[in-house]
Image 1 (cartoon, rainbow, N blue to C red):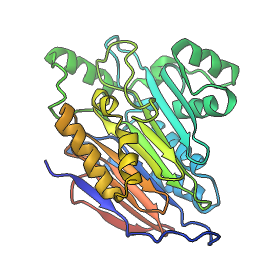
Image 2: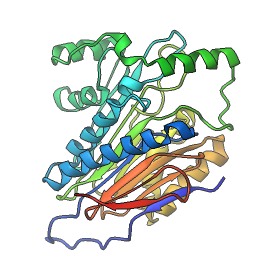
Image 3: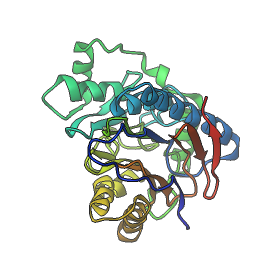
Image 4: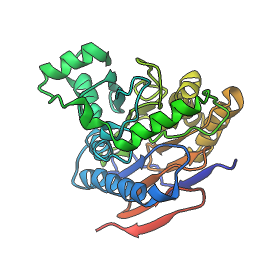
Length: 328
């Protein structure tokens, strides 16, 4: 299957002491099949998230503020598999994973198997900024959230009727998990950003796989797999079959190719191609370089994405589909 991609014009490398960088914000809404009846909702959701994140950058906000803002917007949208739209584990419960990373100092925060909070990405950022650790899970993450004053919400508030039906369907069909097949219902969300000071950040959040085992953790909270940010290279957020992404450390692998002199598009092709050939895994990624080049690429049939740069918004879902419009 051909890779779908979109990328901006090559940016010139800023000289030392030059003016502020031109900010860039890219978001994704997960790699996998997208049914026609939800395409427009996903398109509007991804546009709104990109606009929220880019507005933060245009007002002088940091890359980490921008990616958090964009991902919160998607966590609050029940059409995406994160926050209030998270799909269900085998017991019909929501367990969510998220991570965030700031490229200027490699500071990182992540949480996994969290329940009863609206925005796991906010909790991940608190881990980054309020603890000496990088990663908290389950009960420990819940205790930390309570200590930080993060509101606990009823578990049912995160469960949609659509996701109840999806779990029932999955259990009826008893489909074995096959990484060769098209991953489905993987609307994991993510964002990457370059701010005006030349710093980058990423954020990734997900409800995981439908009918997953209780306690299953995928790539999204794992730095180096679900995302990575280094202001000397760039920032990336990944999506797709989590076990495959974990096996190849997809995020850090892509940035390694950039360190070796590859363009953002070449690096994306190489790492996604390796994951497909080595472990038969399908997925996608969004990537921005330290100079502002960006790409959105995937090996699945579709991936909702949007990118904001130079006052313009580009977005799409299917291969070859790119719409461009001016931002107010």
